[in-house]
Image (cartoon, rainbow, N blue to C red; front, side, top):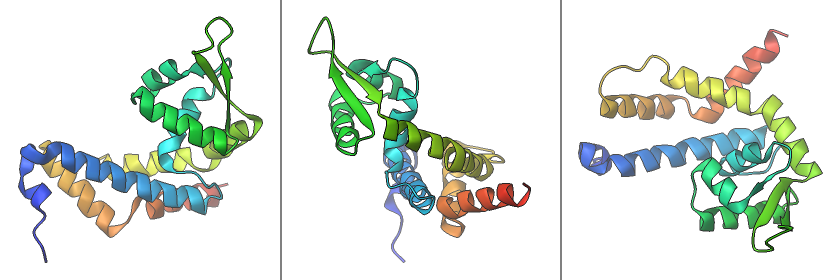
Length: 167
């Protein structure tokens, strides 16, 4: 087996390790989302959640709300608009300031996610991380080991199934 260089570098590669873990969590969450009947990457849901309010947001406000660069938000907004999940309107006083809002289909997707995805993923991640103790690098190793045993999509499905069984 090949040595995990990123893990072996410890604090020096913390950013790379967090990025790797984040990508894994997003990929496994996307699998759960798809199994729940929605076809959208996990990375897009924070934008939809931020837009789930009356009046929408400008591109700049959306970037600030989710902590992503404006060019990154612009790419995501284009993708979501192409999917029919949002509408983009030029500002009334400054046409360069575009207002972004959920479309009717976007509202439907958010409602399905709020009911059938978000609570189960939230609980699965809470269960994954809830009893971790000690130094951060050790906690990351434990999270990675736990995900190797049971990926997040399977954890979220188990949470969903348990919730449905108690109804």
